[in-house]
Length: 108
Image (tube, rainbow, N blue to C red; front, side, top):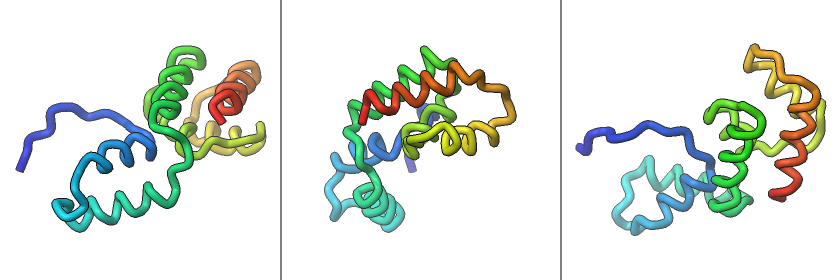
């Protein structure tokens, strides 16, 4: 068993990219289930997902975990976005919410 070298939040697109480099025949059952799941639900290119995550962290002062949640779900309206940010238990200014939605739109 390999030791964990780094812990990092990654988007579904990034998971698909990583698992896509592994031969399906060499995957264990959990890896296959995960790859099957991300193949069905991932709809954004891995590079776009990474860029969006980086931009959300830098420009909107989100944590990496928060940015990954936004990248994976890509809310399209202010009420939908607020439903996610409400759970973070921190105040996000309306200006920042608008910036988040613009970043999502720019990467769609």
